[in-house]
Length: 294
Ligand code: CO8
Image (cartoon, rainbow, N blue to C red; front, side):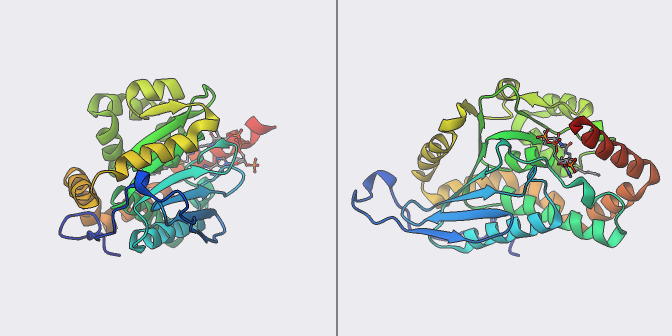
């Protein structure tokens, strides 16, 4: 779906550049709403900014259906001449995303797990490789796949709440974050911090995440969206083509590693996840989550 362009990211589109501060005060707001089951997508065609609000209760887990919808939404925005940036956030109180839906990896056929993993790759390719400005407004807990989604964006703003944690906790589930999760984290927090973080499966509190550079900014919960939109306008003040080529220059090698190893990565995942010992770990983890609740 167009991941391989000359520049590595999506093929560059010349979208009309709008300068936010020069919008006429009486401009009539043009909002377009895309109806989806697992998220609402709203595009303000005056500013060129879309907001994806994830809404897959109870915890915004990334099921196959969710991932497919998300990727389609990103592709639609990418193709939309009026869209220049996207804010990704959650409509579920206290939770950004609980990461991959563990039920999609437990007790399923190899065909299903393969299809699921392709969809996980796809969402990452779509977000990490996006030409749009991508901002994660992390308004709640963000473990594992939730953290990956946020790390794939250009900028992260997190609600300043010590109860919210973010990180790649895979080893705690007895599973291993694949190389492109690792690469994405390394590109955000550097090699040593990634090595430490991944081996221990560390979940950082909001303030620790800021200290480590895993998020760029903390802000009170009720200020998170206005702040995301104001940061967005700073990014949109840069001409798209210059920013996009720069982004591509930074991200292309990482994207290419997955694109050239996509099938073997799926095969590795299917082989790994089908092992009895891994299935057992996932079962215990699901039970732990359920017991923790009761
Ligand atoms: N998948 C499926 N169901 C989940 C998940 C999930 N990731 N997370 C929570 N749930 C379920 C719970 O089991 C519970 O279900 P039920 O109502 O049937 O008992 C329900 O959602 C609500 O959960 P909680 O009661 O725990 O809700 P809280 O608000 O107390 O806490 C949290 C929310 C903080 C998100 C908490 O649920 C949590 O920590 N969840 C686990 C998150 C996690 O560890 N995710 C890891 C997923 S793995 C991943 O994303 C990358 C895998 C890479 C694979 C590589 C292999 C090679």
